[in-house]
Amino acid sequence: MSVAENLYHIRQSLPEKVTLVAVSKTHPVELIREAMAAGQRVFGENRVQELVAKHQALTPDVQWHMIGHLQTNKVKYIAPFVSLIHSVDSLSLLEEIDRQGAKCRRVIDCLLEMHISMEDTKYGLDRASLQGLLQNPRFLHMKHVRVRGLMGMASFTDEMAQVREEFRTLRRTFQDIRALYFGDKESFDVLSMGMSGDYPVAVEEGSTMVRIGTSIFGSRTP
Image (cartoon, rainbow, N blue to C red; front, side):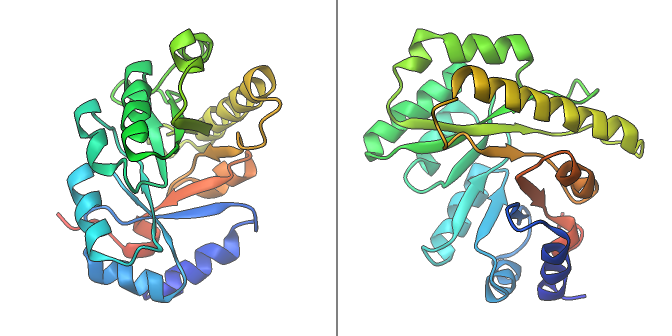
């Protein structure tokens, strides 16, 4: 099927309030243009250099999401235009985003990445680290970042019961953290979980944003 057909079928499977991030990493600009012609405007990349190049090549109405691990020394390259950073996993990274946001005179939306899988290779905060960050006076004084919610990646496994429980744990954390720290802020509304192999389960468990690449664009280009 074509990119447009893939997008159509995925959109049909998603509730209206779930945002689809088309993960275009490693795929050429031509395929992104096909997706744009089908109405898609939100795209996700996991490498800064590729994200910047595609931003420069395409129209300004694209919303670019940084979904991969982000190093502090590369924040400056995406700070002027990025719509949402999914992968904030430390206070120091959030501070750098705040600094670069101040330089660009804009508030940068971010998600705090939680480690929910059984795999040690994945990044993310645990519950204690998350609460420590949110209680830290350095975070409370930031003016150029806005924490919109949480993101997590489930284990890469065919055991959907395990995946479901990991998503369920993240949803509970999201609800608890919203009540404890963001009760008066309607902007804390994003729970980003679910990819091509597990997004139906993620949506059932409360995801408001899914990150789908292979099911839209096909296998990654080496």
